Amino acid sequence: MSGSHTTAVGEGDAAGPRVLVVDDDDLFRESLGHNLKDAGYAVTEAATGQAALDRLAAEHDFALVLLDWKMPGMNGIEVLRRMRQSGLTIPVIFLTVLGNQIYEEAALQGGAVDFVEKTRSFGILLKRIGLIIDGRKGEPAAASAAPEDETSFRRGALELRRDSGRAFWADAEVPLTITEFRMVDFLATRAGQDVAYRDLYDIVHGPGFTAGYGEDGYRANVRAFVKRIRRKFRELDDGFDEIESYSGFGYRWREREDSDS
Image (cartoon, rainbow, N blue to C red):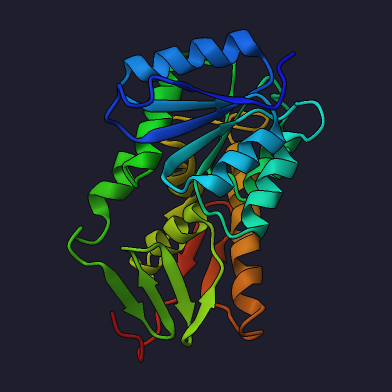
């Protein structure tokens, strides 16, 4: 078992985005680090949660954190909680052997943008990393979204600032995570249209990924996201009812005659 130090793998050699790998398994951390380096990323390692937090506090140019759940001293979900409490919004992917749906839901509800089991291939992980760092989660959503040069979007009391990933309701900021922001953007730009559970989930995990139990297990994850999004808006406006449920299919953003985009 490693101590609390951090080490760099290929820093300075790779010109790509910086990724922080946090895992107490020396062999796994080293192997993953070298694979990421070969893929063009600059990689920094941390063997403990505290070492990761220290590094994140000192350096502010990480594009992504790959975080193990089970670690001695401070587990991954606590690391994520402290990151968000300190205002760090760097995307986090949990990379763990814990495959139960309750861990995935806890990670996503805590502000992670993805949850990948260690048993999955490096190619799958690499694709997920690329989608997150590139600022998209699934080609269908990207293809039908608003033009890339539109850095802001308004509909009624909603304002989305795409260049910074910030959302506002009646000029008050809504503290959405990156994934929540994308889901609101996807719904709001299609006001009045029915959006399927699958389409919303693809924003989170990429097309074809299924979580939970059974063929439609992903629906529970989408419902958890939407419930949390609604709660955040209602903390600012208890009359918020823009996200309508379409039972058995998905959701729609309410279209109002006085709304403008």
